[in-house]
Image: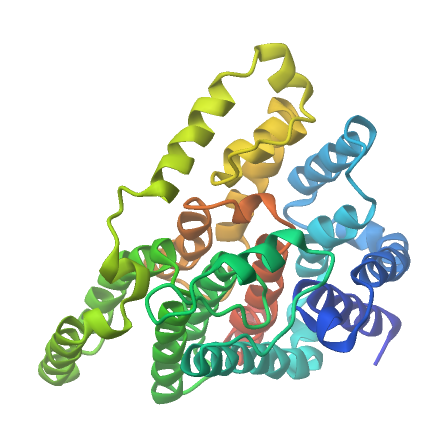
Amino acid sequence: MNVKITLIYINVIIIVLSIISISALWGIEPSLFSKLSVIAFLPLLVLYFREFTQTKYFKILMLYLCGLFVSLTLNKDVHLSLISTYFGPFFICSIIKGNELRFFRPLFYMFLLVFIINAVAAFIERYIGFWIVPVSWRNDVLLGQMITDDMDIVNFRAFAFFGHPLTNGNVMAFMSFIILYTRSISLKIRLLLFTTGMASLFCFNTRGAILMSAVLLVPTIINYLKSYPKYRFVSLLCIIVIAYVLYSNFETFGGRLAHSDLDDRNSGVRLAAIDEFFSLSFPDLLAGGYSMKNGENGILMILAYYGLLVGFIKVFTEIYLSYKLIKNDESKIHKWVIMLSLIAVASTNNNLATVLVVPFYILFMTFVMNNQPSLTIQESRA
């Protein structure tokens, strides 16, 4: 194992540990992983920057990096670790060559294990009605929600290993769809894991993730029925049975989606976020540095905090590359579904403005979706 591969392993593991709630579980200060991410990323950046300059998306990622550096000077709350956490996954994804993918197979299994453990934790928490994974004692938002949430089957929301239920819902949604389209896993196992991921969304009680995933499931089912015509009758029969079971028992496990209107307090907060953003003056929006009080729109939060110019660069790059960096699937429908499982779900809350969802998506997609034998074969023939 050479220096490049070793450094990639170190950086990926540190970023993943900084994202999941492992620090609270072990009693580790969360800032430790932030410092470690900077220390680990610097040698990778210096040693392989020249190789990075030869990659396809070098220019747009350099613009992205420059935007992050500008935000360091304009916003006092932006830490250097945001460079390694936001830019690091894009850098890692860009410099990995097809003939190096076989060295990262352990990361493939690591990310699948994270998916399974998080889903199991969600099921256990929902079943026992209590949180088994602690959050950081410094995180007032999560601690406050744990205290104020009603402990009943309707309002209880699992926190699992990604903290906030909205974050969990977003992460489990895109992980589920990526796994569904990962051809190095047998179809039966993919369907089992996908079903598990979709079921976990009800444990997190995230209406946006459930509704968006249901919408994205439509083209997925249509595409599957076209691809496997001999299984069409059996598949349709299974879909009808599953839909009937879900409809008949929706009052039991549907949680907030089944027992509340979409036009509630949370919907009002989302509308208030739009009003708050457009109430800001143009000079304030251009300069950035404004933290929105109504934080239920990640895109508007980024534009307000980073400024219109840097914020637009950040939003555009993350949305554009979340689609273009999917290397190992020829179907545009699959790519759109995967990308929207990140962006569409995240657009219903503030996930795009956090340092959790987009970096983890890039890493999961890199080492699960792109790390398939078929990709190596295709590139070796090219």
